[in-house]
Image (tube, rainbow, N blue to C red; front, side):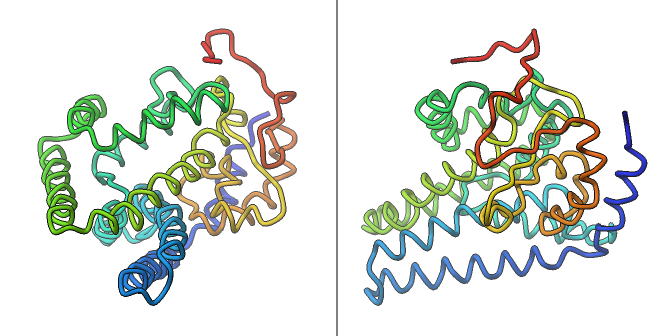
Amino acid sequence: MSTVRHEFEIARKHTPDFGGRTLVLEVFMFGLCIAATWAAVTHRIPMWAGMVANTIFIYGIYTVVHEAVHANISSRHKELRWVDTLAGMIACAPLWLFYHQHRRQHMEHHAHTNEDVDPDIYARGSFPVWIFIKLPHALLNYFNPLQHFRDCQRFGCTQREVAYTFVTYAAYAGVLGGLLVAGYWKEVLLLWFIPWWIGQTVMLTFFTWTPHHDHSETGRYRNTRVSLFPGANFLLQGQNYHLIHHMAPSVPYYRYKPVFEEMRPLLERNDVRIEGIWPDPANERHAPSAQLTE
C-alpha cells in the first residue's frame, strides 16, 4: 500500500527553511581537527590522542558533505545554493573527495539504489568481502586520478565540473606533497592518513554497506532499512534512519528521528526493515537478478 502523499506531508513539516545546524557541525568538526592537530604537533597532547580526535573528525565531517549535496543547508532558500557548494567543498578537502563529481555520483545512487548501475553497488557482498576486499579497493581509488576521470565521464559531469575536480585534485596533491617534502611525513601519517582510513572505513560501513545490505532490493520501502539500538541516532548521525533519508532526501539528518516516529505506522504497514545494529538475514529478500558476491 503506497502512502507517498502522506509521507511527503510529514517530511515537508520537518524540513526547515535553512539548515544552519549543519554549518554548526562543520565549524565544530574543523575546530576539533585544528585544535587536536595543533596540540599533537606541539606535544601538548599525545600523538595518539590527536589521532583519535582526527578519526572522529574524518568520520563526522562527511555528514556536512552529504547535507550539502542534497542542498539541505540552503533548503528552501534557493538563492543560497552557493552556501551548500562552499560548505561542501570545504568539508570534502580532508576526505580527498571532489564535491561536484561526488554530488552527481550520489544522485545516481538515489536514482538507482541497489540496481546494477548504482555507484554504491560495489558494496554488495558479505561483510568479510566488504571489509577486506571491496572497501580497501574503494579507498585506494580515492587517490587514482584516472578513476576520477572515469567517474566524471560516467556520471555526466560538465566540462567545468571536470575542471573543478582536477584543479581540486592538484591542490590536494600539492598540499600533501609539500608537507611530505618539508619532512612532516610522520604527522601526515598519524594525524591524517591513519585517521582518514579508519574514519572512512567506519563511515562507509555504516552509511553504505550496513543500510543497504544485501543490496538486492530496489523497492521504495525495502531498498534500505532502519537500525535501532541505544545511542544509534547520535553515533550514526541519523543514518540509522537511512530509509527516511532515501524516502525524503530534503529532510536534514538531525530530523530523521521525528520523521520516522511519525511515519512508523505507515512504514510498518509497508513491511520496512526495522532491525538492530546489524542487518538481519531473516529479513532479506534476494532479488532473482542480484548476483551476490560471497
